[in-house]
Amino acid sequence: MKLNTNSNSYIIIYSAVLVVIVAFLLAFVYQALKPMQDANVALDVKKQILYSLNIRNLDGAEAEAKYAEVVKEETEEDGQKVYVCDVDGQEIYVLALKGMGLWGGISGFMAIYDNNGPTVYGAYFNHESETAGLGAEIKDSQAWQEKFIGKKVFKNDDYSNVALSVVKKVDDPETQVDCVTGATLTSNGVDAMIKDGLKGLKGYAIIKIFESIASSDSTVVEPKAEEE
Amino acid sequence: MALFSKQNKEVFTNPLNLDHPILGQVLGICSALAVTSQLKPAIVMGLAVTVITAFANVIISIIRNTIPNRIRIVVQLVVVAALVTIVSQILKAFAYDVSVQLSVYVGLIITNCILMGRLEAFAMQNKPWPSFLDGVGNGLGYAMILVIVGAVRELLGRGTLLGFQIIPDACYDFGYVNNGMMTMPAMALILVGCVIWVHRAYFYKEK
Image 1 (tube, one colour):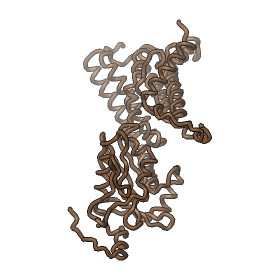
Image 2 (image 1 turned 120 degrees about the vertical axis):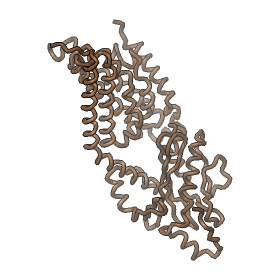
Image 3 (image 1 turned 135 degrees about the vertical axis):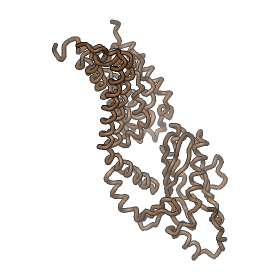
Image 4 (image 1 turned 90 degrees about the vertical axis):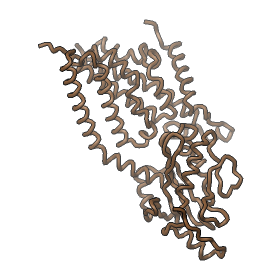
């Protein structure tokens, strides 16, 4: 029997059957691999948190073990994820950041500790689709991320405005970081993301840095009402 | 017909030299530029394309007589898209770092002209076994160029191969500097050009 492969009914049935077969196949593969993919994504987040604590170059199992050793608590304050960590006896708070880059979303983790006020311990940034070699440097360049180390989050005891910023021309090396050359818009995105992520820092009950400032420092910090 | 008759051998070896997909047919350049800044993603990408071309060729070849002529391109695309999605899911499950590095380019294998070219030009007319050889041959030909370009770019651009440092620290002490240009896509184009030139000059023989 010779089928007429060019008749309309044959074409419609053929394509319908083909699409159903392919759909079942893909659904099966997706379901079968989902747990492994989720585990990979979870491990990737843990690695990023370790990167922000300046613990790099660990592979799968090592990273898992180190994460369990370092991260003591995982909480949320006002919708902001905060990881309470302990590195060599030093209490560090890692804040998850989210923002917008030039082409898509950017995210990051910033580790804050107490050194005469909230200070950056380390930082790691990630992006979805920034330009390779330019905007993508926020993720690829370890040297750039290390520029954040030691920067103060606030200036002149003004705890309502985040002073830590990414700028083109650094006037104040205490709180400002040089932006990525050729990636002004991505850098602006990182700047906005940091401001947004750290602005509520003072109000977080879990972070004890401010208690130590209040008890040790006599300068009066005006308790300004937080916007929103 | 023997599995490795002279004809089948030619089907397999032609794309590695005379009918090379990148060097001879100049197909698939786009992804060759995008994923070759380091060796590891280049190897994975080469393998992924080889597997997908081979299996897409086999599947299309098996059903070639049932495919309605008017929607044959659609059918080819559906088969390729399904295979690419499966490979992409497998990479995400077993080689997460690499899949992040390759990002959209795994998905873009769908639009790789080598695939559609081979399906349309070979698998639609030939039996499954020669089609499989043709797919593997073309995939390997493509992978070969990715690996050459990826190795050169990673070595000169970062001083490493597969992430291991190759250029000794002593060279850096003497003032050797990694060539940042090599990590940019433009250098991949120039390198592919150089590879095509060497191939034409020394290996290519007119039929």
